[in-house]
Image (cartoon, rainbow, N blue to C red; front, side, top):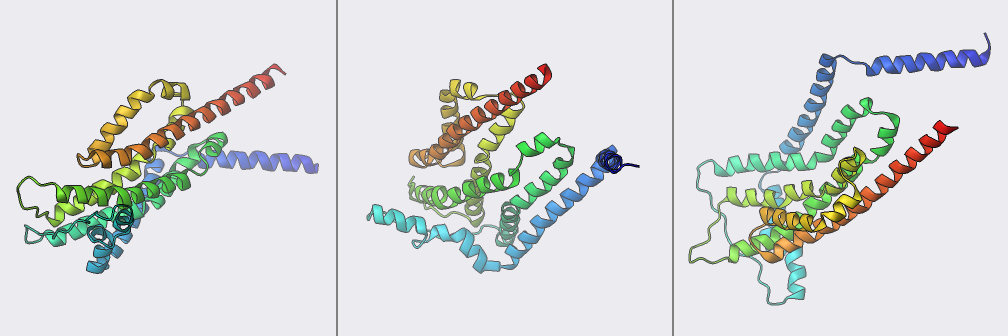
Length: 284
């Protein structure tokens, strides 16, 4: 048998084997999904356990730092505005087990945030076998880009939104003694960071919506004014009723929207170029 025939047979057999590996029953897909979920949840529990075992010192470092004058954001603001006074307040607990329960909740939520890149990687591993080669190329760097945007959003929420919002809420005077509970403080800290990390995924969402033809750059330009209103409403939902803080989160969201328009334009141009090439091959 000629050498080239042997190679062709080998390629054909490899392709058939690959097809057989991809053809899985519904139950096999569920089993595969189950293991991905187990590993993802396991990573959350591992990080949550590490944070919980870190005890009070780690909790103080992560959650209570924005309460103290030596927080980097307060130092920077104080250089610009010497009269600026960082917030000063104590936290209280109303329930007998509140400290313990809040510690568990905070550890789990932090575990989710820290393991977010790994969760994305598990999602990618589950989805990847069912994609065509061109779809895999289009989604290349998915885990890295989403992780980078998420970390950027969480960092922005932690170092910009959280300290300014805490300062505003603490100094808001309605004739009552401000004595925030530990639970409410941790809840607000999570609200200032986790949603911001998710919102920063806007360029990735626009990329996939453009890929499947639901939106394009022209559509986003047409409804830019509507988008600005939605951005301001969204900013108001995840920040206190402070105009300055709302604009602080609204500005990066607006830049992300403009970046998404550029991404949508490039994706559309690539799709049109691909269609022209396919039509050229068909004609020839």
